[in-house]
Length: 137
Image (cartoon, rainbow, N blue to C red):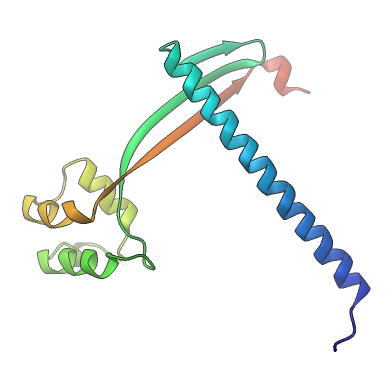
């Protein structure tokens, strides 16, 4: 059995503690974000004003295509290559492809081939603009 390095053990323990704390904070942040979204929708207001500043809640559905390691990626690339659209780009960027798809900038035949591969991804954003007195702390 290898000799345990006490310095490495301390650093690894600290790192793992931070990862666990981050997971807890990420869960709390996700829950707080959902509560803000629910409240915003319940009162039918996108912008909320508080003593600490203004919060804007934005919800947008956007198209996403399979990433390089996901099922359907080969079919997606084949459809784009077969249509000739692949040659118009220097690299295959599924984010830009999704934006072009959403904005109806793709040829109709390509858009039709991509339709079964496209999924809707809900994007919730919270924008916080703190007041000057809060920011200077």
